[in-house]
Image 1 (cartoon, rainbow, N blue to C red):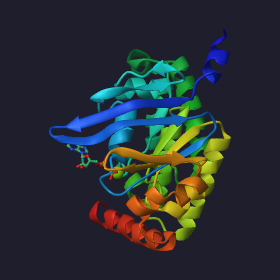
Image 2: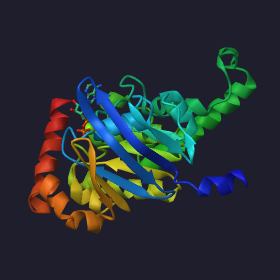
Image 3: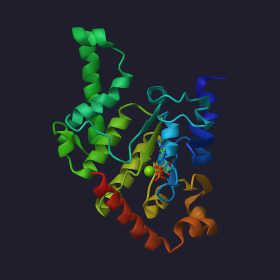
Length: 280
Ligand SMILES: Nc1ncnc2c1ncn2[C@@H]1O[C@H](COP(=O)(O)OP(=O)(O)O)[C@@H](O)[C@H]1O
Ligand SMILES: [Mg+2]
């Protein structure tokens, strides 16, 4: 079997029975998730449900107490840099940029893991180093244009408006050439126009062949974006399925929604904005 044939036989990302225990707290209990190639999967659930912890388990930041994570059918070692090299990139709920570096430099940092020239070459600044450096800059500029930040490359990251910082973080993640992109609350703190732009950007990312998992508070956003939605409540996977099925599921309405979707939506958006104010 060729590598490609093998590749298409598996979901691009799969978590099997992931359990994460912190001291006496079971933050995740036997959570499984399947992401097929070219799909967008949503992960929703109340604050403290374990969503970010799940991303941390997928990306090797945490070593799950139990369970495995597979990329194209191969087990991923719980090591953040190996996970990045293997092709999983992420953004963070609380933006993590290099605040004093320029916009372009932030994207170049993401690109670094794909550069072949080692530290000696970079010290010597030989021609092959310069060639690779130029290619990295070109790719980074393409990505900045892709996320709508072409004119901001020389700005200092911390001076960017909040929504642009989120887009920069996405560009940096894309610079690692991922197969899978994990977005942790990408629209938290955004206004409706920025949120819609973010939705279009995620579709555009999917259209380039990157598969996406999105954590979001804004359930209208999730239901209008995802091929499939998983609902996490107190560390347990409550329901998963197509958005229209999940939305109508009585267990979801009771355990998570509890109220008409419009009401939840405005509440969760308020909570996200409060999050932003608490963690600037
Ligand atoms: N490193 C950690 N040590 C101890 N408890 C943690 C740690 N990370 C997360 N938790 C706990 O796990 C639970 C889930 O948190 P989190 O994954 O951040 O939820 P969500 O992203 O769904 O809001 C919370 O009770 C949180 O306090
Ligand atoms: Mg979280």
